[in-house]
Image (tube, rainbow, N blue to C red; front, side, top):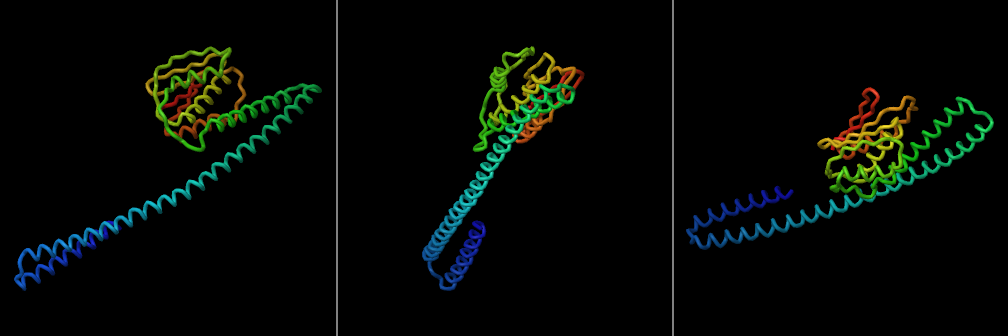
Length: 261
């Protein structure tokens, strides 16, 4: 629109210039009069262009601000509703699991067989998945997602404190690694991977930083109950959100997860 207005007034100025030149040639007037008239046309042109451009620029800014404000308020309502729904569902699931655990204990006091043991393992797995979901939800920043520079090696050491004391042997080979991403998301990702590594490993957990990669590897138990995969699903989705890769691999008796920053 601004370019159109500029072209319109430039074309109008050229036409007036040509008309004035023709008139002055016919009347044989002095060049000074021609120059004065031309300057007045230029001043008129400049004023009109500045007024139109000011109106359009400020009008566009106000319109964009208004539309952005409406969008952000709507997005905020959606986020609050999502938080409320997740907390409500998690609370109800937690109550149901607690009730099932009490009933299971009553059943175990009467009879104890393989079916009861399988039911107990399923409830334990469901309870752990619920805790993982709630812990991840608490760490996520829904209000704002600001990127910041932080040390991945320092974050790993901080998270490892939550798993002490542990019977598992931890082999560390960390080098300084800086990353510029959303810290709360990365913390949630690494914590979930560490939880799975300590939970499903037999007795060894390897943590290594190689170039721009964080590698977490664990040996696999001989007898292991398959989980729901909720933790790894959260890891994959948060990784996509932060634009970096997660590579999973099972080789022999080892399960490896690599975060490529």
